[in-house]
Amino acid sequence: MVRFVAPFVDGSPLRWVAYDEAFVNFNAATGGPPQGFDQNRAFVGLGWAHERSLFELGYLSNYVVRGGGKPDLMRHAIVLAAYFNWP
Figure 1 (cartoon, rainbow, N blue to C red):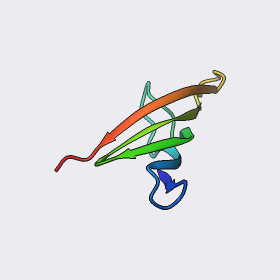
Figure 2 (figure 1 turned 60 degrees about the vertical axis):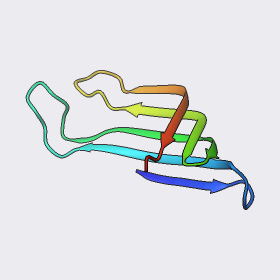
Figure 3 (figure 1 turned 120 degrees about the horizontal axis):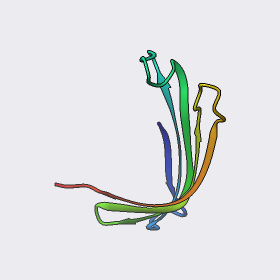
Figure 4 (figure 1 turned 180 degrees about the vertical axis):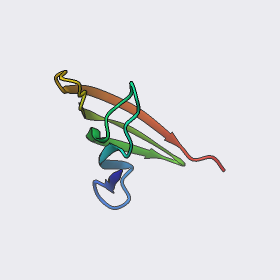
């Protein structure tokens, strides 16, 4: 995963957030997914930092290779996520 988080302006609790993560299967399994590229998730949105937490809202694109002659999938979603840091 490659992730980018930056404030709108210095000292602002609002953040630009973007990430991309690719999934690769190193081995093939009988009855399971084939070897190679499996899926990609790309996200872009806004974040709000509050004390030791980060809340994000944005768009997620999920591309999935299905293999076996099935068509690949492209999913679109609105995502709300919360990240908490515990002491």
